[in-house]
Image (cartoon, rainbow, N blue to C red; front, side, top):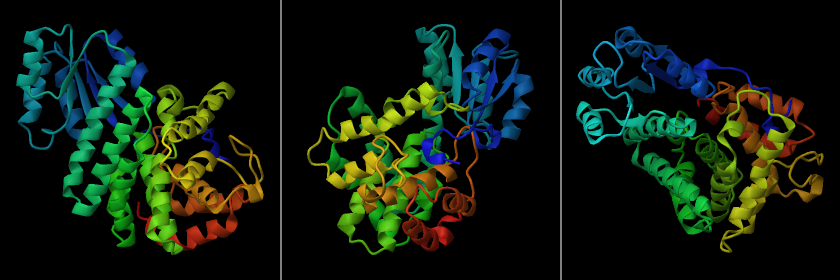
Amino acid sequence: MDCNDENCSHQHAADSKHTVVLIDNNSDHRQEVMDALMSFYNILPYDSITAAMDAIKRAMPGVVLVDEDAPPQGGYELVKQLRLQEYVKDIPVIVLLASDSREKIAAVTECGADSWLVKPYRRSELIKKISQLLNAMVERQWDDLPPLQAKVLRGTVEVFNNIADTIASGEPIAYKDVSEACVPLIEAVNTDNFMGILHGVKNHDNYTYVHSLRVATMLTLFGHAINLPVHEQKILSTGGLLHDVGKMQIPHAVLNKPGRLTTEEFDVMKSHVTHTVYCLKKDDSIPKGIITIAGQHHEKLDGTGYPYGLEGGKLNDLARMAAIVDVFSALTDRRVYKPPMPPEEALKIMTEQMSQHLDLHLLNMFRHRFLDALSTF
């Protein structure tokens, strides 16, 4: 089993997905939306508001999509009903419109809906809108965390979103901003206040951010546990947060494909490493250790990794630590195609099936020091 290749056999796992309720009496449109979203979300389709109301209360979906003319009373009235009921009043709602006239947009705002889309819309536009609303809901829950943990989450998600814009514009990543965002993370790890960070991020819908923050947190934990000084922990934390930024250039359909990747798709997926290194090298202030983490976290001791096929003595401890944490995080991450694997099972697989790929001395150190702490997430 080689889950470091990101090409494991993906299995359907409905309980690992957010739920979206769709209400539209147009059967063709319902099917189009289901086809567009079924890989990423659980879809509960209904042809009327009456049929959907019980399901909304029972399923507590992440988002509701409702057509403005959904029978019997229309989408605007549905939103008004939801906003008056305590247990469902905060569920995000997107109203599907026939046009973006001033009157329709005003009606969306007046009824209390969160957003709208005008038919016909692009699949990518729909997915982006749903993801934004899901993430906003998760991020509001961070207000209930202790201040330090909330600061870590808010700071890292802001800098991560800014990185996406920076890469799209072709500008260098602002390393200073990333480094400063990781200072509270290092403090949280060194004061044993990091579990809320891992819990707080797990339902976020931006997988690359979730995975990167988890890797950053666990790499920092690794460094703290082996008594690395704070300035070296900063290399680990920032390296973890930046190690996969090249995935922002990988098509969504490949990054989240619910089936096994084809050879061509896997080649596209593997290119995220070289994309990442290219982006990082645009800023001369980024330490070499961070580029090592980004460029070598998919290398393996036996030389079968990518992109360089490095082996044995050519891999320093940063690369070896990053490979261990990246694999562990990938196995224990929640993905649209699988539920999170229990930490004990992940570590067993890594020890028994990846002994030729991973540094067993460092892996045993990771296992012994972190199993108790990480078993709760």
